[in-house]
Image 1 (cartoon, one colour):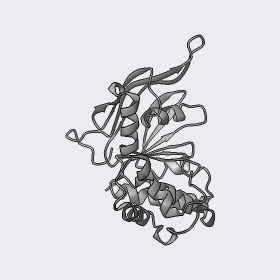
Image 2: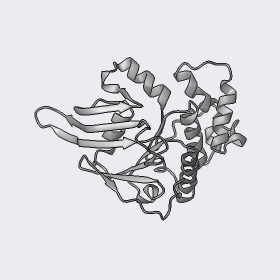
Image 3: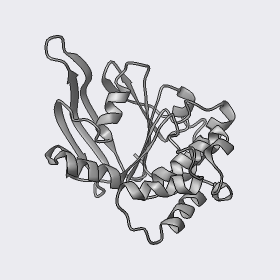
Length: 241
């Protein structure tokens, strides 16, 4: 927890969350998960392939519903919301970053970032300025008019991050964000996460990579659908504020 106090409201609060697939031979992808993510947290959710990471990401990102347990996002009981309201909450308050950058190849970097607002129905007025401000936060203003094909892998991911943070989400949810990057570009993205975290952005990073996890402020491990808190080392990560 970073700056978390009892008076603060968690961004994410999972209590006894379980997810089972199938009826005749059920697969227990998650088992009684408890996880609280506070404003300003940078949490790495670490686990091998098949551990339940993707299932947990889908639940936190409001892309799926749990079988048991409860989930409150910024105090809202999301289980009580219908699919339309869940989609609206997801679009407004959760920014997604994936291993693949999902940039439209024939649109400029600026246009790719600005499209984030189009999908959530934000007003057109001032959109370019807001997109440029997001690019400024990730150090990409000088690449605003470039096409994705003209960018390095690290620059593409920075553009994707700018798109994800344009609407000032409460949570930046990242799925293996350095998985397609070489070491140099991966470290550049991790340094950007450090800067965003220092600027009070709340991050949850799903990863199998211990090097990525070592940069976070807090780590939890998931194995066979069971989540446990890990002791956080100070080497390789930013010092707490």
